Image (cartoon, rainbow, N blue to C red; front, side, top):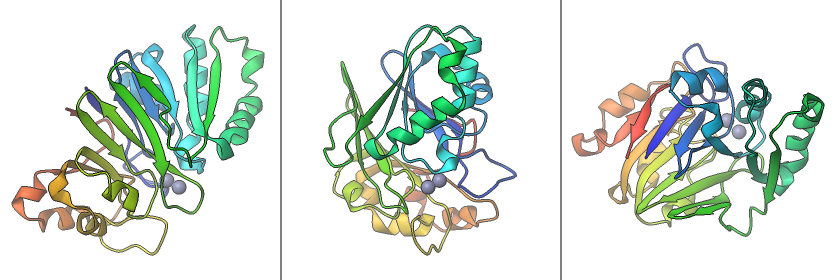
Length: 249
Ligand SMILES: [Zn+2]
Ligand SMILES: [Zn+2]
């Protein structure tokens, strides 16, 4: 199983990164978490066939998390995709996703594939994907707009993504996590709506987390200095990933 990072940047314009988006391998194909940057180019650079993207999970509709959707669909259409693409989003975001499809005139392309928008209630915490030994469930994050993180149970592994959020007690209560993918918009201090790397490493019980993968990073922040200051045993489990990095587990 693998995590493939298309982008690792925060909302701020970056010289080094596309906005945060990543693919997670499922049994048959991949699901993409948020869609930004140039998704088709990044997927091709990562060796992922566009046809193998079966699901898209939207965390929230801030532009840095959804602006790549038109380019992804356009690329899929040009490559003659036939299989449906399922987009999961909060009920409150359904109309925005549908307006995106309307604005780009998706139905006028006469594409041979269907885009199924599957809204869910952020309160029910029910799985949005359940197949064989895979279960993907959203949970509420703490951000300036309604946002969800996602928990992936893949076989015996638990992978959790914070999405844009302050440190989240729901994640803290989850117990053992194999991989925590967490946003750190800043390295050492943050005002609100986001997390700083230092704060997240203090807030969570890192003894119960296998690896911490740090995304949604801003240019010019001293992440490396924070990383350098960590105790050796923690340091080797905290990963400052870059665009196009892959993580096997
Ligand atoms: Zn963001
Ligand atoms: Zn946001």
